[in-house]
Length: 234
Image (cartoon, rainbow, N blue to C red; front, side, top):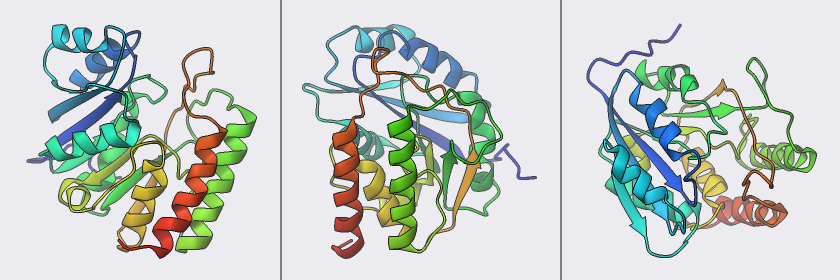
């Protein structure tokens, strides 16, 4: 069993948010209950609702703003640049991912056996809302393509819960503004031959009516990104 209680390490949690006034306070409340020294960075990516006002009222988090919507990748890159933690984690603002899973997600990093840890929604063991079929098929296909191109066994490349050694993540040059961030960061850490672990996590997926933003077009972009970053410069 890995140790989920670090002695001297800090954790930076990047929360990209676009029009998430309905859930952002719940996310911040849940994160504040974690037993670590935290740096919570909320990047408001051009919201038109009260997301920023709620973050400011809640307190305890660094709020960074994009004046216009630039995409999840751009928001995460802004958060990475502001991060100082020994470990950096990405937490979506919509509560599709459960902060109660974070101790076990980060345990391989705290114990020093991993450089990168991905959650996985596709290896069982935790509560799962039934996936949208085409998203499920797309995720499986993209993960298979990742494994063929990069000689690995990742089951859920597109998962939102990704955690990294901070110095490693900050040393990687990232360029994607949109959801291509997920295949880009995966490609670039795998090309460095890092120790990457997967940990089963819960998943409370949203429908489009509930605010889900990713579409089939993002799947096509992910395919081109996997190819581009496999054979292009680091």
